Every structure is written in structure tokens, then in C-alpha cells.
Image (cartoon, rainbow, N blue to C red):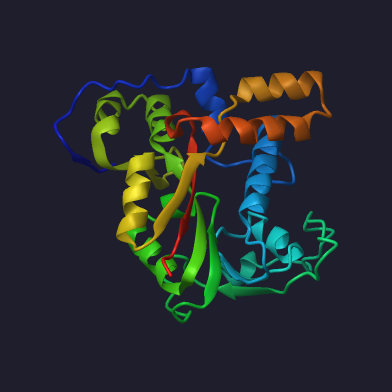
Length: 282
């Protein structure tokens, strides 16, 4: 882990309890094929947030979120033409993506868009011309997996048309501190709240970059984008979600609506992931 910043000071935020960390920091996130109760709720929230963010008018979108995230099917069902970037040919869908297996009901007032899969690196978008996309979706923690996120954001800003928007999801410093605490990295943990750049090693050998809301805002501004908002992806704890859905299995939709209202008014420091929307000036 590499940390840069001011002199070390005692960590002020309290890291989550070990029982909560074990639920919120799995190295391998649950997939849509076999999700746990909490992750089923998490992805339902992510889908609702994406649906709210998608442009009202059909346009051309670039999805950098990877094959494990179903943003593309939702956007196609809403009438947008989507180019989805895949890390390799092997990551391409094994069957044709339809509105049925994509879990995205088509809007009754418009025809579905088209989907095009392209193999490439989400950090290097040199294969795309400048100002060709109306929106870029970089969900599923993509920016945190690129340690030099500045370069990736610069490319996102380049391919956006003036007035185009980007949706971004990153690991928060809260999550980074929880991972450090889980691994008993107490000396490193004391630096975390004051680090200019926080790179966190995971037990599987991966390294991710974690952000505060202020750091993410600064990066977007430096890339030439105008911040619209930053909010937590989720604020309800895993224990709360599992308790409610355990007692009321059919209350998922109501719980998602409750989460969306809570996230709109919550501080970003309360979430393991941060969600941001930014616009390219006209």
C-alpha cells in the first residue's frame, strides 16, 4: 500500500465491527446468479439508481462496468444504443442478451436500443473518437480498480459529448479502513483518514483505490467535468437488510425505496461505496 499526504494522526473514524466487515468486504462480490440477501438488495438499489440516472431521450452510451454488471441491458431496454467494453472475448455473453434474460422490462413508449460489445481496456479509450457518447457508465467500482484514476477520468471526459454525463461508482475510504482493520493493518489504518491517495491491498492480492467525496469531486473537476452530485450507494446496514427481508421476504421493493430516500440525505462517509454523477460542460 502506498500512502501520500500529511503527517500521521490518530484515526478519528471508528472502523466497522468485525462482524459487519465480514459482510461488507467480501473479496468476491456476490453475483446475480447466487446472491446473498444483502447483495440481492444491493444490486436492486444499483439498478434503481441507474434507472433514475439514465437520460430521458434515447442516446449513445458507453458502459465500462464490466460483464458482471447489467447496466447495458437496462439501458438498451430504455431505448439507448449501448457500447459495452469487455476485458476479453471470453467475457462476452454466451447467449444473446434479451429483455428477458437481461432482467430489464422494455418501456412501452419506445423501442429498445442496440447493444454492441467491444474488447478493450477501460483505462485506455483510444479506440473511440472524441465527443461521441451521450453518457458513460463506470459503475461496479471500475475507477477504484484503476489506481491512476485521473487518466481514466480524462478519457471518459474526452469521449463524452458536450452536455454528456457520466455515472461513477468507487470504493470509499470507509471501506478501505474496514479492509485494513480486517487484516490487522493498524499502523496503516492510522494514516488512512489523512492520505491524499489511499491504495488498499485485499486478501486476494488485488489493490484498489479508495476515495472520500471531496477527493472524488476534485478528480472530476480536474478532468474537466462538472459535478452534479455525490451520494452513498447504500446506507442501510447488512444486518438491517437481512432482518427486514428475513421477516418480510416480499418487502424488497419497499426497502429499496427507503434506501433511495435515505441515500439522498446521507453523508458520503457512511457508505462503503460512493456514487457520483458528472456532466461535461457545453
